[in-house]
Length: 340
Image 1 (cartoon, rainbow, N blue to C red):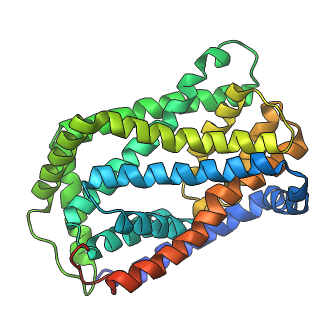
Image 2: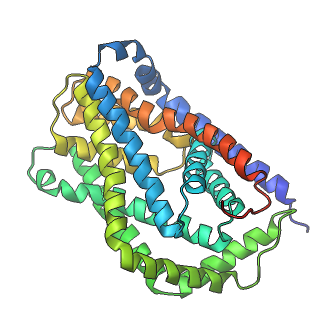
C-alpha cells in the first residue's frame, strides 16, 4: 500500500501542533490574560530599572548571536544576527516553531554563503551549549535548596534542572567524542532531506561530513572554550538579570537565589515546544513561581510582563525586520550567495 504523500503528512503534523498549542493556550489563558492586562500599570514602574531590564535583554541576545558566530567560525555579523533573530521570530509565532525556526535559520545561513554542513553543525552545537547552560542554573542554588527554606515547588524545579543538566551534559559528551551516534543522526537527516520535494539532494557522504564538521567545531572550541563559556554565561546571566531588574522596577526586593530557581524552572518548561515561543506557558509558570519565591503577586505579574516584552515581543518584531533586511541583501533563500 502506498504511503501518504509528504504534503499530507506535513499537513497532519501541522494540524496536531495547532491543536496542542490551542489546548495549551486554553489552559493557561487566565494567567496570560492576567499578565497582559497589567499593561496599564507599566507607567508605575521605575523608568531606570525598566531601561536596565531592556538593555540587559538586548545584551543577552548579543551574546547568543556572538556564540553562534563563534561556533560557525564566521567573521561576519550581518548574516548571523539576521538569521538568528529571524529564526527566533518564527519560533515565537508558529506552532511547533522550533523546528521551523531552525530550518529558516539554516536556510538563511546557507543562502548567505555558509556551507550547509557547517551551518547545521554550528546550530546544533550552539543549541546544546545553550540548553546545558540553562540546566546548570539550579546547581548554583543548591545551598538554598538544601537549606530547607524553599517551597516544595521550587525544590522540585531545582531537582529537575540538576537531572536535566546531567542528561544534556552526557548527550553533549557523547556527540562530541564518539562517531557512531552522529553517523546515525547524519543518515537520518540525509533520509529526511532526500524526501523533501523540489530540493537539491544532499551528497551521499552527509554522515561523514557531519563528523568532520564536528571535529572542526570541537577543535575550534578547544582553542576558544573560554569565549564559549563567557558567551553562554552572558546570554543566560543577562537574561536572568533582566528579570531581576524587572522585579526591582516594580518596587519588589526578592531573594536573588529564589528568583534564580523560578527563572531556571521556567526556562526548562519553555524548552517544551507546546505553544509558539512558550506564549502563555512562560507567563503562567514564571508569575506563579515568582509568587512561590515570596514575590508579591501583583509585582510578579507586572515583572513577568516587562520581562516578556524584552525577551519575546521586541525580539519577535526585530526578527521580522531582520528577515526583510536579509532578503534585500541576499535575495532568495534557495540560492546560496557569496558572503559579502
